Length: 144
Image (cartoon, rainbow, N blue to C red; front, side, top):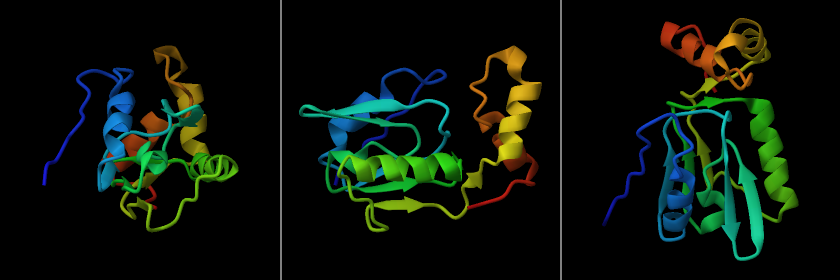
């Protein structure tokens, strides 16, 4: 059995999502091991388009099991909105198709507030990713 790992060498926006989308239809697992909903990518299958920020693109690309791993930070509101978005697009998400690690850290409204107040000068997205990772590193964060 072959394994593929798609890694970025910079900050993101390198086209990793497109490569994963190309491979996902033939994979058993699509695992996201780090990051949050501060970026995103568009999955195109035929004439349909899906814009995702947190859930791995394999959710629409085949029969793979998709995993949001413990290195990720998860905003529960964004996660719920993305599930609703996929349902509206006709994609059924089940616990057999999507697993969220109980060890992943949660992004809370406090993280978003801190991101907007304290980190505005460094050009963050304001979605609380950095402060959530700070709590993860300090071992003070809330886990899923």
